[in-house]
Length: 114
Image 1 (cartoon, rainbow, N blue to C red):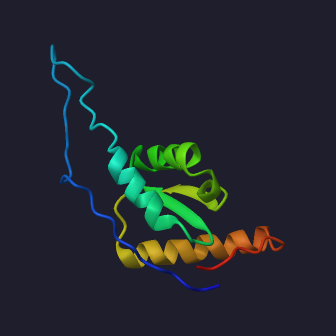
Image 2 (image 1 turned 135 degrees about the vertical axis):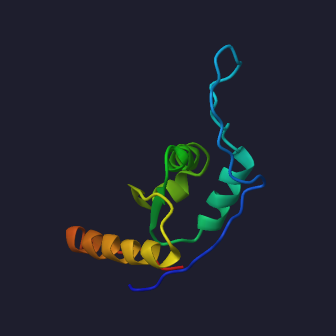
C-alpha cells in the first residue's frame, strides 16, 4: 500500500491572524468554519485510512467534527500529527513513514484503498 492521493480543499476566507486586544470583545481566535469542515470530511469519504495533520487546533476541530457528524468516516482515522505547514513532499513522506509503521504495529488490520 504505497499509494497517496492528494485532494485540495480551499477555505472560503484567506488565512487570518487575530490578536486579542485589551477591552475588546471576543477571544481573538478565528471561529471554526463549519462549512469548511464539512467540505474536508466529504473529500475524505472513501479513504482507506486517514492521518490528520496540521497546525494549532485545526486538526482537533476536524477530528471532533468527523466523530460527531461522520461516524463511519471516524472509523478510518488512523492518527493525528502536529505538522506546521509542511511542503507537499514532506507531507507525503511523513504519511508514508507513518502508515508503514502503522502496518507493522497492526498487521492484521486490512484497510480498503479507495
